[in-house]
Image 1 (cartoon, rainbow, N blue to C red):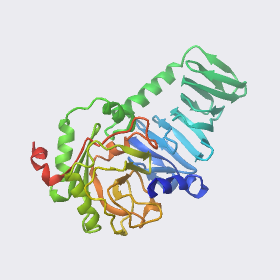
Image 2: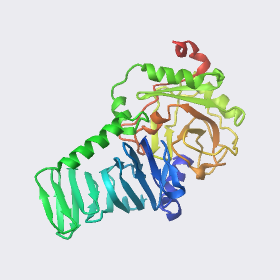
Image 3: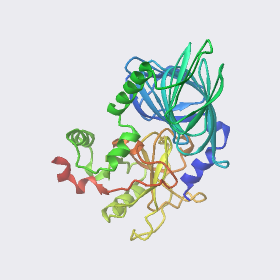
Image 4: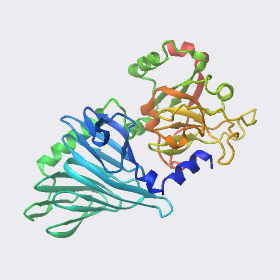
Length: 387
């Protein structure tokens, strides 16, 4: 295991790290606010412990939580992320979320869960499932799409299974319903439509597209041309995924030897067909080790710098106990990761295609890992970019 994988794994059980970062945005539609630091959320931003997230009119957000489960919020909604901690040594996620008002969809990742979602009129016990919640001060409605949830309210505790709907109001009236209310149907439809049509390119949509490889669209081609304008093509890498291209601007000013190495290996075709073997949403995506592919296996002396690790930073992997052990393996950070600062050699950054990197399938390794179709030096594919 690389030092990167170890660093991420070791960071998770400790409250100081786990409590800070609860998830990462993979789609943001219009106005979405996080009330810690009173900031507008953007694609790739972290949400943190005890953060309140709210959406404005015609707004939505898709948040990938630390265990790779998904929380989608529709318009005029508000939640408070009380706690959400993944404990890999126990193989379980523990936490609580306060759904203040609005429409939400929660989808588990398959990891064992002990999570509660509280609303003004009910408490929902989550054990890993897929369900929608519509909540306001006087009423809560829960519609289960897959699995089972346990809803506790003034009516007692009710198991709500796939295809069932439960509603309870502040007067303690309600129970199982034949179908979702018209209000819930409309709210869910609007929420999912906004997320699906968002230009920010969330993981679910990109992964669906990844099953159907296709030529670049006119929009992608235009974005690619814009990203490489006035750039030194000999210090660009074009990384092609099924979901679309990534453009990496290399930094020989920071790490000349590492940049020289990755260009040599790219020209040898070492990375073509290589899998992303370690992907953790909000942290990093690391390639597999290209064993037996490279003509040179000489390790490189570390070229650490003060460059911060933000979403889209590209760096070389190394062994846990040896800073001078980088060879050919690299990774892309998927969010701000200060624990990596000064500990890995930065070789560049994404200047186009962050949404495609955020859409990489998570896992260690993923069940069906994404592969690098090709990785080329920009000056070698100059004609193709002009088309």
